[in-house]
Length: 358
Image (cartoon, rainbow, N blue to C red):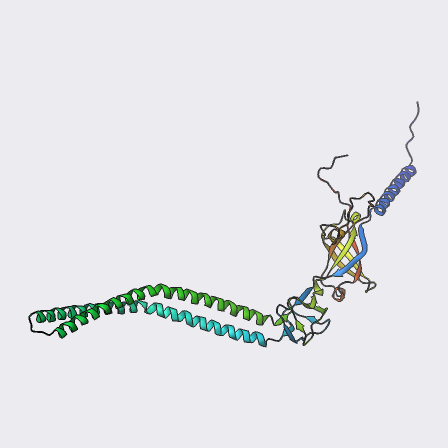
């Protein structure tokens, strides 16, 4: 019968040391094989700068900014000679005043129209009384003439007076009809005058806008660049005059290889090294990843449906925002080359919907 010997304490300690050493070695191998950061030197500083252009043609009378000058929102960048536009504004104001007077005049004509109709009807009533008198007078002279007491001349005169009164009544009846129908004409003319007034007011508003366009002001805070505006130069609509670069909102675009993106997520910490500032590290974070590789937006996209296809690792632009409150960030310029290192942390388990389990 064999007797089992119990391991000594020394042997147990040796086994424990070997186990710990193996665990440490495995951890080191895992850390070396799986880096916690991804870096690239294919990166540069950029900003969403604004190109200012004239909206109206004219000659520049003032350019109060210099090259590379810092400007504030609303600051005057350039001024176009505004004399022609002020004259156009005065002409438009005069046209509006004339159009308003025309509308007021037609309103007054429409307001007095009932009185004109009443006057025409009163004239007809007067004509009726005159006709009754003339008809009675003609009958009286006719009776006198038949009785031999009156002359033929008086009878003819009374008959002529009656005919004249009847003709005047017909004329005044026509005047009444025309006066009543004139209301529709006045309303149509008033509508036409109102349309002319609206057109004049629109022209006035455009004249005011054109005058305001003679002053070109900064839409954002930033630094002047690419200044082509010069006093005395004639500018045309759409021609760029200056660029305003908001350096306070500058960011980095880094082109990472597609095999570096598996663990990269928005919000990840980034270390930025600028070539022009040796030894300086700027902090940032991943803002977003582009929806396509850089070559996808090229004017002429590559055609891979050929027999001599060679696989090339693609690069995806990653937008990196610069954390605020860093003095070194204020000295950045658009276009500077940088190196970026993104902290990707622990490996993420990527689950692909529809994939077959292994």
